[in-house]
Length: 286
Image (cartoon, rainbow, N blue to C red):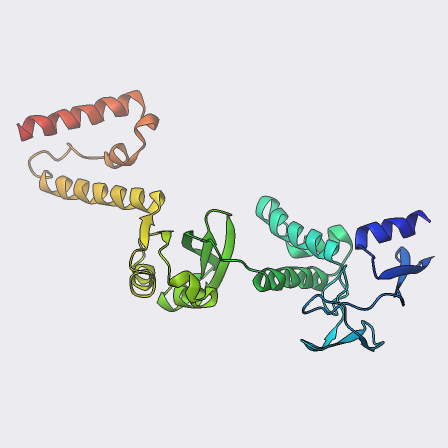
């Protein structure tokens, strides 16, 4: 039957077989049973082990791992969600929210499932990622904080800049938050030289200086460098404005954005006035 072939191909049924296909309330119901001629596989070590009991899912008696639930190729543990469904729901919950700002409730309605099903899929995906996280070979990392919600609620994130993936996260944006992230990743990462890209945030710099390898290189991201430069320019403009307020009150009036604007975005009149101010400075210096 076509449905049986599709189920076998989609769910990777090697030690299981399709016993029955029938029409249910919400669609087709496919009954899958274990193949008696195949030994169950331990969900921990991945080896075939003797059968312990016939609970659903069955359990194995593994001499290495103890009594474990058998590995089911289309799901994890006792979860009722299939791996393809978990993958689809967590991908939609992440990408659709980022692009269209559609909530998890919207994803649930789109796929005809409950909000808790979407939540369980995202949770299972995160747990799988944490359990299979690989940090060997990681050298270039990024540290940043993002606003989780209103009211200055932040989380600290560490990224692998080479593979563009999230490595660790912790609530807050202080020294403890970053230290928790590094502690979660382990000493193998903290004990080797790294290249760290971050903003100019003293709590982060303190942890990097005190807890990472002394040969670690810190690179400040361009956004914060430019932001600090523009702040310094504006402070100098204010000092000059107050200094020349009595001798030439209109000289620097309404010139703030002339100094802060990208030169390519200046209008002809703005370029002309900025050029005149720069010439006055060169004359006064000479």
